[in-house]
Image (cartoon, rainbow, N blue to C red):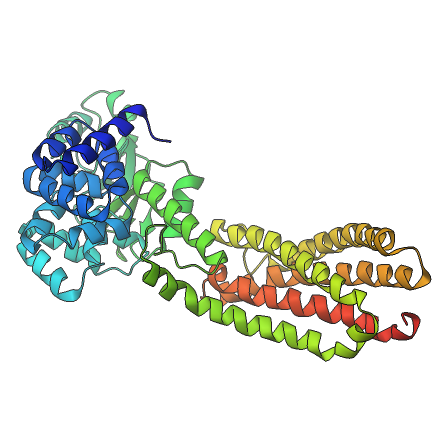
Length: 458
């Protein structure tokens, strides 16, 4: 929800841009926070957004840098690409190296090289170092400028080091302790540092059971560790246990938001790099492949119905009821998928405990199927009358409902587990396969039972 201040700022900027007063519009933005500026940029039309950001980058590079870090990755990259390489370099070198690496990695190769060459040597080196690591790993999202203390210091010397630390280094509530070869050997809270005599060696008060992650650790696992142990940051080490960076809680929040968005989009067959403001052509290009896959599976389900044409011709009421069975199976499968995919993301569901989860979802499907099947059968008999024929059809509805909801529970569990095992994204691919199972299972069970009992339905 937009605040009154934000609304007034947006109205002012729009009015000033219509009058060609870009400089005055920038002065209005300077009175807001970076998050407010990002919201204004997001709300402006394309022409004004590009003009305002270009002017902001020329006159207030620091605010421009802070503002794009509040935008979505796609929106930020689009704005940056409108600037000349020299200006992009100035804006990005004001950012933390992990944020700069995130944006630069989205540039075409030629622009990426130009920007890196134009950035300050230190900033460029840090970014290139981060880009060595695979996307979605701790190494890619870490901040390399992490503050650390030597294990040979006393408390007094450690406090002096903290006080003289550069503003550019990442300093959280914890202080990490390293040996003379930069191996991570301990951790110490600022509180503990201030509560002991200055002459105390920090070796005596540091904790040696340090929670850390390797540079190749998946960012989802990093987020899970930070959440599980209530950390403000987690140190990142290389294969030799040397401290190379830190992932802070703000980075983790970005990961959680990104992964949650990705899972929600994937369950709907939408790519995570699409948003509400994407161009129509881009949205069509990103959505079309999965829609074509869905079309293929829908044709498969239709072929099952086609195989029972004779049965439907003899008992026309089956045509009205068949979609109920398939639809309920799809709804139940969506519930199971949401639980299983989320469980996989949180580490609650694994290949090892998959059998227990499978039987639990089968049981849920059985009882839900019984309840909904009985209710559906009663509705069918009330709707079409309590004739012997409709009582049988009501029984077919009830039994096929049970069968399809059990199929939904089984497929909704097995498919994402198998895809995860095969290193595929269970959120992206599961929906298509599971929906196919419930559609085919629903039509086959309902129309198959009706065909077996056709002599009682004439």
